Amino acid sequence: MGGLFVITLGLAVWIIGWSFGLKSFDVFMVSIFIAVLVATAQITGPFVKRVTRRTPDPDA
View 1 (tube, rainbow, N blue to C red):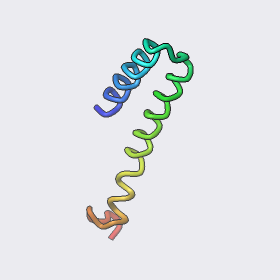
View 2: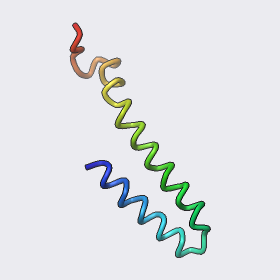
View 3: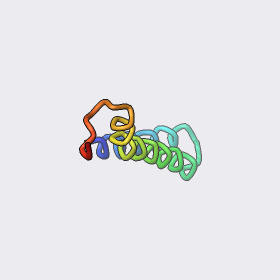
């Protein structure tokens, strides 16, 4: 579900930036940056929760 939201948000940012006269490649790079941030948060989220003991350790 998060991936679909990021794709929609990136497309909206790209269209809005392009309508304001910004270069399409520059706005595309901003969209990619947003997608990478969200992907990083989703990948590292379980590790951070386990390290901070918010969920039980499956190895213990």
